Length: 184
Image (cartoon, rainbow, N blue to C red; front, side, top):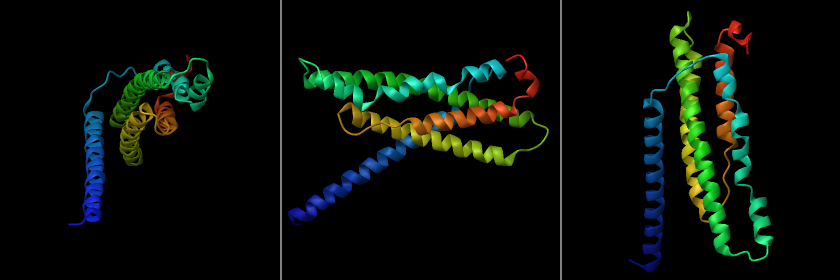
């Protein structure tokens, strides 16, 4: 076997391993997402507390401009940039834990409302499953992006997750009886 063939085989094995690990992570995330029960205080106030405003600060935490500003400061060292990226990743991880928890609670509330509804809503059920899968996949991809960002590679984009969360929150809001919004 030539050196070129050996390198090609190693590259293929590395790529296949990365894909395999990614699929395992997606499956683990999906299993956790669908399996965890949540406390469900489905009220207008509770839905309003789930505003995307809670997550807006997360959108700016990994802004490249902050890191560029840090690099212009006197006494800047590469270790400072590494520390900065690690701290920001930890903050984003915390926001993501809350976002994941809130998303699961919305999904569970929608399931409860569908079960209690007078009419079947198969389109809502399929949209809910599709959204859950998309969200779980998005979380895995963001986690992967965070690992790369931590080591100075690439950017992290959480806007898709926040939009998916808000879309499902608005869907839930339309299903909660209108009289519960009168006091909100």
